[in-house]
Length: 404
Ligand code: 3PG
Image 1 (tube, helix red, strand yellow):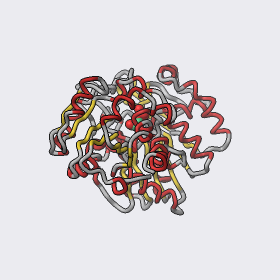
Image 2: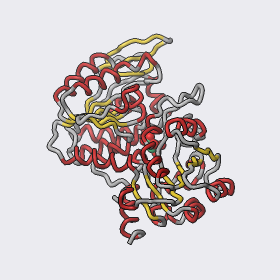
Image 3: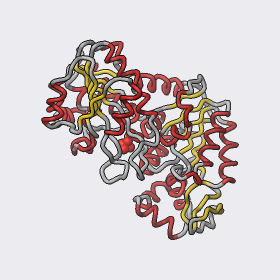
C-alpha cells in the first residue's frame, strides 16, 4: 500500500480518515479510553508540519447504540494531545462543513462530525459504488489528497474508507502503516501454538472470524469469553437459564446457534468456560457452566486458571475483547488476569480492541519487541485470518489507477 513517504503531501488540503471510535461512559458521555485518539497524533502532526491543512473524519458507534454520539468530546481530547487548535464542525457534508473546509488556513485542523450521521456511510458497497456517493461527490472536490489512517475500520467497505481513494491521490497514514507491517511480520513467522482469546460484544464479527480461523487452520486454540462464549455454550447444549437466553435473544445471538454448532461439530478448537460469574439480586456468585442461576457477567476463576495454562504454552497470543462486563469493577478481574498472564508469557502478544486497551491503563505505549498493541478489534482479527480488508484494497486500487 502507498504510504506518506510515497505521496509526500505538502501545502495541500488533505482529508484524513481516522478511527477515534472509543468506548463511551453512558452515564456522562465521557470517553472511557482515548488511546485511539492519541494513536493518530503522529500522522496529523506530520501532515501539519508539512504545511497541509487537515480535515479529519471518523465514526463513533452505530445508530441505535448508546455509544452513538457526536465528536465534540473527541475534538477536545485531540486538541489536548496534538497541542494544536482543532476546530470541531458539527456537520459532515452540508454547506456549513464545505464552507469551513474551503476557508481553511494552511496548517489548520478541522474535525468533522460523526460520519455515520450520513446514511450512505452505513451501507457496505464496492469502492466504485461508493466513489459515486453524495459524500464523495460533495467533499472530494475540496481536497488534493486522502490519507487513510483508520486501520481499525479497514474491514468495512464504507464510503469514507473505500470511496475517496478512487478519486483522490491516496495513501496510508502512519498508524495504518505500522499496523500492517507489525501484523504481517507475525503472520509470516513460524509461531505456533497460536491462541486466540475472543470476547466482547460483537458476536457476529467474532463468529465470522472464528469461521475464518478454522477454515484456514490458523488457530491452535480459541478461548472464548463474553457473549460469544455464551453462544458456543448454547450450541453445545448447555442450559444457561431463561434470563441469559433472553439476553442472547435480545442481541440477536440465538439465530447464530446453528452456525456455532456446525463449527463445533467440525472439530473447531473452540474452548468454552467451565464456570461463570453471575449476578443475582445485586450479588455476585461463581457457578459451574452447567448450573447457571443469574445473569452471566464474566467467566469464572476455574476457567481463568485453565485459559492461563494455555496462554503460558503459546508462541502467539491474540487477545480480542474482554471476558466480562468490564465497565463494572466486579467483572473486570478475569480479563485483567488473562491480560497480565499474556504479557508475562514468553509468546508474542497482540492486543486488540478498545476495551482491551483500556485495561492496560497507562501502559498503552508499551513498545516491546514481543508485543503489539493494535488499534484494531475486528479489523485486526480479519487481517490475521487472512481476509482482504476493503480499505487496504481501495488504497491499492488508488495506487494503480489514480496515481498512474
Ligand atoms: C471497531 O471498533 O472495531 C471499529 O471502530 C469499527 O467499528 P464498527 O464495528 O462499529 O464498524
